[in-house]
Length: 424
Picture 1: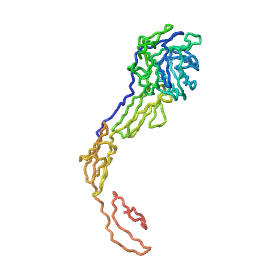
Picture 2 (picture 1 turned 90 degrees about the vertical axis):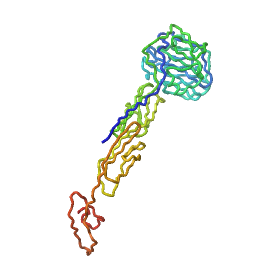
Picture 3 (picture 1 turned 180 degrees about the vertical axis):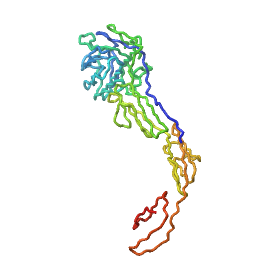
Picture 4 (picture 1 turned 135 degrees about the horizontal axis):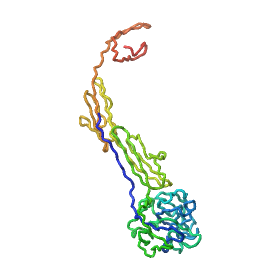
């Protein structure tokens, strides 16, 4: 008989800040924001923004020359350029760009996009996931162009414009390389902008286009009817995160893990202990122990790992059994690392039963608890034929007479020269 307690644990997920429900809206040619000469110097920078592409621009059909944030004219003078599917930069060592397939994006969905240059590589992130990078060195070149949101910085009114169509929000320009973790944690909102190290400009578009970093020289000015819209139904970008459900039932020595990944870029896949990725986040028939569940979104650097320990207290001492008088049996409560209480108060995993009677144990592991008991009985040793030493001549035989008990088995030793070593 067993007393059972089922265990279901929710491990939770990564937390992230939620932004407000307003954003700059650009829906026709000639709409953009001019932000002043926000120049980045040295060999580190980050430019990031939340964007929702409305499908009007060519980037939804395979072209990508539409600027989220621009401070450039051509390949020789790019201080920074962030576009919906790649980023570009020019340094004293050359011109660099990294690309992404435009078809990865879904129309009318918000994405967090970022370019990061750290002095050795140029990286492009989507929703906190590293999608592509290229080796890059040198100090970034500077120019006198006015930083522009939604259009080409050098000539926003030219016919070969690079107009962005859709929503832009949470634009930030940094003179430092932000880490993967920083991008994921603060993609929706950045606390204390005036004290953030290396932050040059930050545009939240919450009713205005001021630089909330505090430098009024970089306040953004709308052009061509660019507006700020409030959308209560905004579904903003989220970093890859996951919830984990662990089920351990004391009715079984095995448990299960269910992982539910959200955010990042679809499709989300799952792996257990470094095994192959699969579309399902459910892993069953798991023995107690430590496991690493990996949740991976689309993108080369987007993996969320969590270490999970499955515990249970399933105990089975086996069926009742009889032993011979003078013998003993070693009872094993299993569940290494758990707590144990036997019928006599002892607390070891094993218990040696030497007497007949009822033996019981309670096993506690985490929040899971189980009890079992077993009855040990004694059996009287069977009587056997009393034999005395006998000598026979070589080639002769000897018959032993004994009344057989059909409930017993017999084994003669040594079996050499015997016609049948198992006969009574």
